[in-house]
Length: 155
Image (cartoon, rainbow, N blue to C red; front, side, top):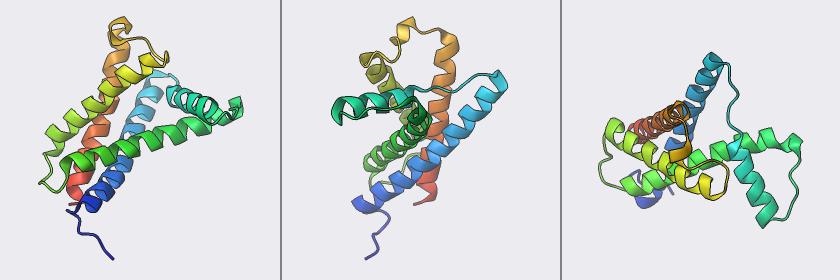
């Protein structure tokens, strides 16, 4: 049975797809930025996954598994936040991709500023140099714009 795109299930499905698209946009932006800067990307998603797997599932994570975990967690996290976007947008007409996307991307970024320091995987924002804050917000802004644009396009 097909779901109407504006039903709650349709909004969640659109959010899921939009989250994956937003994650692809963010990944492309990060890849380009790190290549230009001659820097390595963050392994923080893998560190979060490792803490969950070892702490909750009581399974050891090897160094060889970390890159795969990094990619999997990055995509899972970004895609799942898209569901939250779909639920928030619901069956209302979706906000503009610019306004809704930037607010959403900033919200996801702000969440990371809470849970990563709580997990001792990053310092609190007031201890971070602006040179690391700006690119990180920029990546999340790209993500939010990707989610917002995809969500509207899927309507």
